[in-house]
Image 1: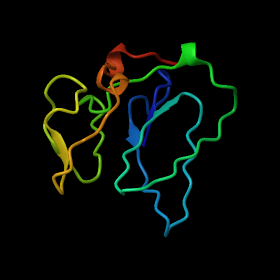
Image 2: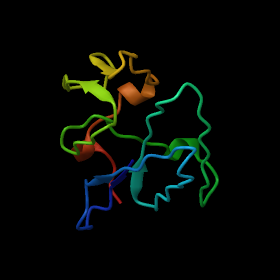
Image 3: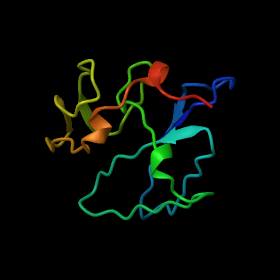
Image 4: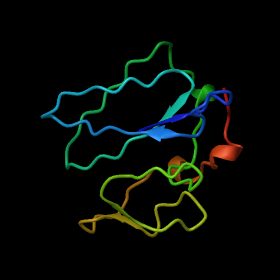
Length: 116
């Protein structure tokens, strides 16, 4: 999924998602000014990035994956927003618990994140 963070854009704060599977051979271009995230639904996945610059660790940022202001509809995910980006209270519809990194459980929502 991608979220538009360009504050003067007509689609600021809107999201778009696409399912990338072996059978459909799709790729997903996420332009500058957009946040991105992914949810892996299989036991094994290979996720590759192609970027337009070198990685700068101090420039890394993020936003809450479950921010209700954005309202991303993650596929096969069940649970209710508890006021934080914690994985607690969420699972896949088959009962698999959500596995998020520590940093992904600490980001703030759209109104408190950086803008382009």
